Every structure is written in C-alpha cells, then in structure tokens.
Amino acid sequence: MDIRSCRNCGRIFHFRGAYNCPDCVREIDDLFVKVRDYIYHNPRANVEEICEGTGASVDMVMDWLREGRLLTNENAVPLLECTKCGASIATGKLCGKCANDFMSQANTAAQEMGAALRKQAEIGERRGLNYDNK
Image 1 (tube, rainbow, N blue to C red):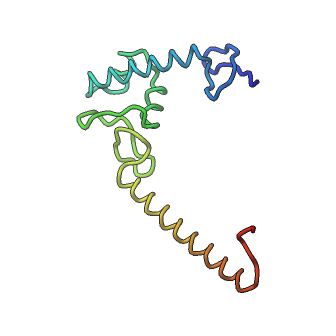
Image 2 (image 1 turned 120 degrees about the horizontal axis):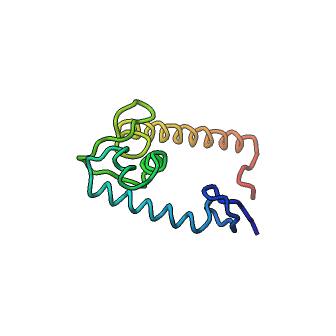
C-alpha cells in the first residue's frame, strides 16, 4: 500500500495515481467545471477575468489550457503563446504550423530509423547473426 501526503492540503491518503487526496481532487474537478462553464459563457474573457469570476488561480487555468483540457472558441482572446514560435494560440503548447512541422520531422526520423534497422538486420543476416531472438 502506497501512502502519500496530499500536495494541496497535506492530508495523508492512499495513493492511486493522483497526487492529491480524494477530497482535493473533487474540489479541483468542481473548480475545473466552473472555469469551463465561465469560459463558455464569457468567451472574450482574459485570464484575470476568468480567475476573478471563478476563484481559480492563474497557474491552474494556464495549466489546463496548455494540457488541452480547456478549449476556447474561435472568438476567444488567445491566452497562450506557441512554445516554439511565439504565435498566439488558444490551447496546447504549439500552433498548428509548428505542430505540423514537428510531426513531419518525427515521421522523417522514424522512417530513417526504420531504414537503419533494416540495413543493420541485413548486415547481420549476411554475417549469420539472428536478431529475431528465436
């Protein structure tokens, strides 16, 4: 049994993957719903207005936006910046262009790695080595 101390209130609790006790998790979830609803009804609100209207901290709201848990509509004030190019974005960490560039680079790297592994296996087969672990 894994016993931990809640990051929020300090109470001891049985750890099941969340770093807060069940009471604090419930409070944070309720606050999230309140923030989500506030943004829905006030799409042009900035972070300070959201926090003032809901009681959430700026850090919590910004974390939820970066994680993609909170989404704003197309009319919303952009609250974040792309971590790569600095463009204004509504949610996440990368703008669409930088995300596409990243995916393209990752696909290219995966293809190159696959080709290198196939070549290594071919060389091994020519030398009589077996990489299949059979």
